[in-house]
Image 1: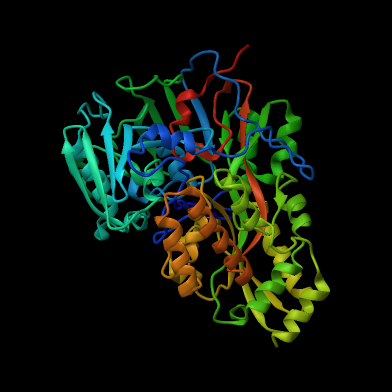
Image 2 (image 1 turned 180 degrees about the vertical axis):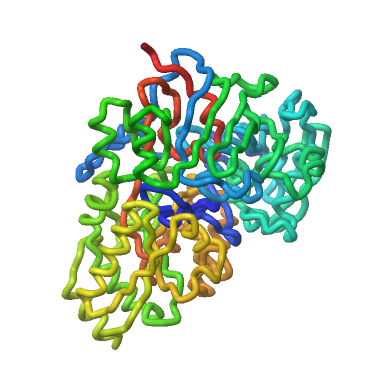
Length: 573
């Protein structure tokens, strides 16, 4: 949910970072939730849920115009390790699950705190701490919990812990990043020692999907209360994952230790050390030298160096991510849709993919990736994509639009940062596009550590009309992104409000039937495209580098919400 990097998503949750380097734009507090179901609503058990959540298209993911190939995974580990080191681009401010709305926090936390459901490497939903989920009627979800699950501090998980953990997300005093995903929840109650029942105010196809993200994370009630205000920053997180929180060296690293009392398959490494390397060159050099064994969010400018180094393998997997220009203000020239359309039309998307993403991306005029429509009927998929404008550049047509809008010579401010090549290149591309069609685009440089504030702090967005954002979906459903433009949504920074858009969002959210839900989502996609609420630029895959010492990490963006590090072990010799 945060789920999107500035280049990002967001997250937020989903999303709610730059396309290749790291910050996420995914905070979406007012965003509903969604996924795909093929069985009748009544008595829909988790088995049916998983079967109907088809995940991204099968195949190797090759693109005709892209210099990369998607891999389903990495080779399974051949043995155990004493430790491995993982490079991350920033230090999380907290590991409290209610605030886990960005890449750094979720990359680490997913191995410590588990959720009721789990996002699989195939980007489908599977049982997590709940061994079964059913919905006996449109307004009820029942979660039957696993027996004998231990917390890191020794206690046993009960329904009370689940009710308490989800309640922290709902309490407005906590300011949880995932709070909006609970907006349709009437009550969460214990209905048995190992059973929790969620009553909804209205049907919500999205809520059960978000239970596989940090929104559905479970921690010990006693552990959270004991830690008080220090929860998430010092001491134990008291969760159930294959790793427990070890030493946190502020400004340097976080160490996770294997939890021997884990209910599932034990982690293959005794320790996982996450080292904070904010400089892209330093991160690349650490991967090349062996100082770090692996990492996600590889700087795009380093792809060729890593490929040619012989030090390891650079993999690409499904990312459910789009690189966009987030329109944060419509008070100035961008308040005229013709100016927004002109900027979109003037962008050199192909040039950006080559220069900003190292060729590892595909141009698009869609805000949503094709993969999140995998569970949609063919007619809905066609409706969502067939009427979108061409992603190809047309300077003359764009220039005429600016003239017709009376915006020639108007000034707009675009945020940029050295956080990654993708961010700076996209900002420069927007500036060039604006210049060529009669607009004046001023670039405002923001320090990498402050870039994430654009997603959470309105003051940080003052005076800024646009910024680069790579938005990642936290569920395999287009509504994760499209809900951001509903009136009052967390990432609706420009304050867009349209009653028909709001009504369609509610319609999609309440529809358990895939045909109805995706049909409404297709209409939303067309509305968002027509109004150019964000400017879509490219689809961006997940990148992961593993040196020759380790293997077993997933290639897809599932690592944000599943205990991926447990599978990392020694590579075959």
